[in-house]
Image 1 (spheres, rainbow, N blue to C red):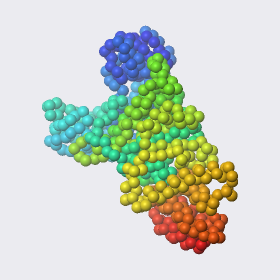
Image 2: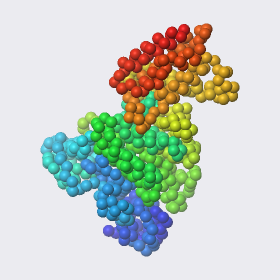
Image 3: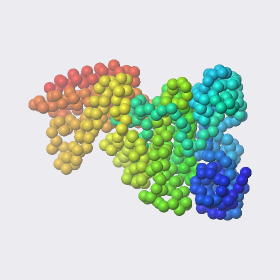
Image 4: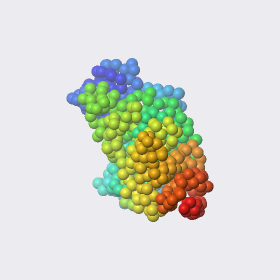
Length: 585
C-alpha cells in the first residue's frame, strides 16, 4: 500500500503530505495502528483526513496508508437483526474479539462470511437480465425474504450459470456475461459507497400513508411512504419515545434505526428494549426486520457524521428489493454538530452559529435520498425509503440553523412542545404549529380505504382546535362567563379532542396503536356531539351542563378501548349521541 506522512493531528482531523495519488473520500489507514479514516479535503499533495477512531497518541511523522477504496458498506444477507457502529462494524463481533470496549484499529467485517445461506434462484441459465433484476431469494429472517439482485453497475447481460443450494457470502452463485462479452461473478453480497445514492428507475409522487397507529400523526399530520418528516423538540419532550413507537408500529416492512450521537444511557435503553419488542403484525421479535446503528455521543465524532450515510445506504438496498423501509435518525442535530467540529478543525469559514456554510446542502442531500420509487430491473416493483429525523435544538429554539434547514427539505413537521410534555400530554406534538404537506397526496387513499368524509372530519377537528386557541386568550383576560354557549361548546369539544383523541399512551397495550378506521370513528363520535348540539344550542333553556352530564359522554371517553374490528359499536354510539342530544331540546 502506498503511504503518506502525518504532519498535523487535531483531534479527529489528521493532515498528511505525500498524498498526491489520493482521491476525495478515499478510505485510508492512519499510523501503524491502522486507524480507519476518510479523506475529506485535498490540496496539492496534502490531504485532510477525518479519522473514525480516537487519535490519542498519534503524532507527526507516522505513516498513512492508501487503500484505493471509498467508504462503503457491505450489503447482503445478515444485515437484519444486526447492531452496528457508525461505520458498519458489528458491535457483537467487536465485543467477542476485543471485550466491552472498541479497540483502536480493530477491523471486523460487516457481514458474517462463514455462515451458509440457502439460495433459491428465480432466474434460469440463458435468461437476459438488466441491473437491478432479482436473481434469487434467501430467507434472511422469518419476516423478510432477502432478494439477491444483479448489481446496478451491470447494465445488460445474459446468465451464463446460476446455482441452487447452500452458499456462504464468499461463494459465486451466478455468472453474467454483459453485452461487451465481459463475465461478472455474482455473489450474495454487494459493496456500495455510502456517499452515493443507489440508482432507481423513476421517482413517484408519494400517495400512500405510512400508517403509524398514532392518532395525532395519522389523522392530523400524516406522513406518506417515501416522505420525510422532522421531529424537533427540547430535552424530555419525547423524541426518542415517539421514534421508537414509530419503529414498532408503523407499517414499513424494514426498520433502520440510527442512534446518531445520542447519550449512552439512552442508546443502551434502546439496545436493551428493542430485542424484547414483538412485531405487532406477526408476533415475532421486532429485531427480525430491524437494523440498528448505535453511535453514541462518547464515540469518535467523525463516525457520527458517517453513521447517517451508512444507515440510508442500507435502507436504499432494501428499497431496491421492493420493500417499504422506514429510517429513524435520532438525532440529526448531533450529526450537524459533528460536521461543525470537523469544519472548525479544517479552519473553514463558519456560517450561522458556527455551523459550516454547506449545512443546508448536506441536510438536503441526506433527505433527498428518501422517496417512493420504481426499482431498477425488468420486473415492475416499487419500494420506498421514509426518513424521520429527530432534531434537538438547544433550549427548544426552533429558529436555530439545523431545525430551519431541516424544515426547508422535509414535508411533515411534528413539533414537540415542552409545555405539553410537562402537562403529561403525550405525544407532546403541538397541533397549532405542526403541519403535513402530504394531506392532498393521500386524501384519495383515506376516502377509498377508510371513509368518504375522512378529510372533512379531520379538517373540522383541526379548525376547532384553532378556534380553541383564540378563545383561551379571551378566557385568560375576562373569564369563562364572557363566553357564549356556542363558544363554550367549542371549548368542551376541543377538550374532548385533546384528552380522548390526541392523548395516547405509548406504553398501554390497547391504546399504543389505533388503526385508521378506529381513529376516524373516535373522532367522528366526538364531533357528532358538537354537530348535534349546534342544531339545538340556540333554543331557549339549553344548558351546557346538561350536555356534559349525559351518560353517553362517559361512553365516548371509553370508546378508545373498543376493539379495532368492533366498528358497529361506534355506529351504535353515534346513534346514541344523536338520540340523547336531541332529547335535550
